Image (cartoon, rainbow, N blue to C red):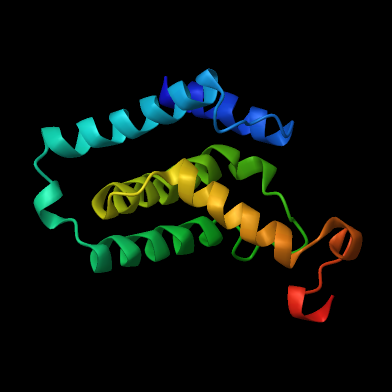
Length: 137
């Protein structure tokens, strides 16, 4: 169920129609956060969650995400590994939600804030179609 809801969210992002004030988005985000919290609380794992270990876990899970592509040569999308890829992506996102929860921050708000900064660093006029870093625009 979570993956279905999250897939809808990702589809909305792909269409650039995620509005942080949109009731559907807020419901999806709330549902995902509650699902992750409930899983953690039922197992009493919060006692093991601190900023350092959660940040390490994000990095480790991101490495597992990269491992899907290891030795794949010219295969840039790993279509035969899509399910595994999605599982590893979910692990990264779950740990990100745990860290946000631990820090007491709203993921949507920190993402929106960072995107506003990115918009300033990467104005459309200079960044469109370019892979250069903002300091080189």
